[in-house]
Image (cartoon, rainbow, N blue to C red; front, side):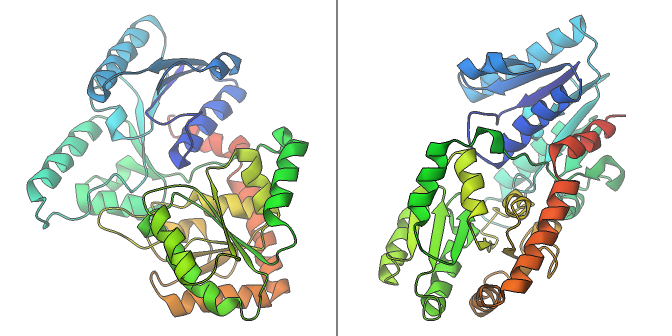
Length: 371
């Protein structure tokens, strides 16, 4: 049996939720006996999965303790070949001796600065993380950036860390006629279409794209920018859209379903997300770029965090200097004006995403890591 212990799991929406759900689905489809220990209340859809799901609710610290006790109980009664955890928080209370524990690292949860006024709290967090990683079998970092960060910040041995990029799945089988009609109404006759799929927070860089549109719409007056997602920076971005007089060129979609996401990307000309690092918050990898590539859409990102693992510059997309407004505007305009180059980049991205990131292949890397 394989145990997957995670705070993030479907039906919640998010990058880590998609990763852990995709991993469970893929491992079960490959013939593994999988038990998922997830946060939240029991869902009606749980019983239709190819694996067992046990949910844990209540106050977070107690929830983690209950999960740890449950893992001990399962390990006594079953032959558990490996335990996969979504982050160090999910293994903090686990007894690690005589267990093969593989914990994922995403970059965002790793402390980066110790000279701030929060010095003591940062040290406390660092100690918690280091203690959690003691005696684990392996740490699976989502990018080279995350691996390097863990070595520099936490002094973890290189031999303990393996880089495995997240897998991806596309739910095209579940796209309905209503989904297609909804997306058709959203896009209408506008062209070209630029899309950002991300939590709306300052570091994601939505404002750079809006400021680029001010110049780009002179050449492409019917350009449409789709912003899918919610977050603490949403009102700021909406107000900036009005300030820049872009209301006719921008649509806010909120959270969207997986079928809607697939359809929107299929109908997009360009995917753009140009993050910066804000405090401790950074883009550890950037699965959204692989999503775009999977649909043959050229992507533009920035040289922040682990994005250079997700985008091969000038092959599957383009990378800008983080925070460089002029460069971001130039690269968006260049790809919109050069259809052949944009489509060639999109096709290279599609080939890479489908060959290297589809869960049918990616799950083999995760399973091999436990051998």
